[in-house]
Amino acid sequence: MTCPPLKITFLGTGTSSGVPMIACSCEVCTSSDKKDKRLRTSILVQSETTTLVVDTTPDFRYQMLRAEVKNLDAVLFTHSHKDHVAGLDDIRAFNFFQKQAINVYATEPTQQALKAEFSYIFSENKYPGIPEINLLSLDEQTFLVGDIPVTPIKVMHLRMPVLGFRFGNFTYITDANKIIPAEQEKIKDSKIIVLNALRHKEHISHFNLDQAIELTDDLKIPEAYFTHISHQLGKHAKINQLLPSGKALAFDGQVIFS
Image (spheres, helix red, strand yellow):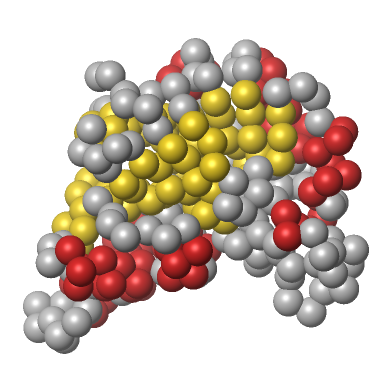
C-alpha cells in the first residue's frame, strides 16, 4: 500500500507520571525550558484527508486543544495501561461535532480492558452524551485508516505484548524493552523511527537511552526520535547535545514530516 505524505505531531513525550512529576523539585521538574514539560506519550498522524491519534492519554483533552485538532477519524491503542487509555471519554466532543462514532482499533486484551475501564460506553442502556465508538480488532495484518496504511508491530513491555505501528516510512514504538527479530523486520527500511527511551539506568520494562540508540543503529534507520521520557533522563537541551547525529529527544508540540 502506498502511504501519502504524513504530518506527525508529538502530543506528549513524557512517561506515565509526566514531567514535571508531582512533588518533585529536581532540576528537570523545575526547569523553565518548555521542552522539559512533557505530557503523557501520544502522537497525532495526519495526511491531507485523514487524522488519527495513537493512544488517548490522561492529557488527551488538552492535547487536542493545544494541537487544534478539529476532526478525528480514528484512535489506535498500543496497550491498556492507564497513561495510554485514560482520556478516551473525551472523544465525546468529536462525536458531537462530527455526528458519528469514532473508530477505535485495539487488540482483544486491550478491548477487554477498555470495556472494564469504561463500562458505561458499552452498556446496553446508554446514558445520553457518552462516547460513541466503533471498537475494531487489530491483528498482524496491514490495514487502512482512510488513506493511511498501518502495519502493527508486536513488541514486549516486560511480559506484556504491546503494539507499535508503522505508517509508510515512519515507525512509532512506545513502552517496549524487547523486539524480536521477526518484528524488527517490519521496521527495517523505515526513514524515521520514534522509540521509547525512559532514562539512563536500565529499566525492567522500557528501553533506556543507550539501548534505544543501539537498536536504532542496528536497524540502520537514519532519523530517530526518543519519547516516553522521565525526569531521570535529564534536561532536554543537555541530553540532546550528547546524542549521535540523526538522533534527538522528541518534545511536546514538535512536528515532523514523513
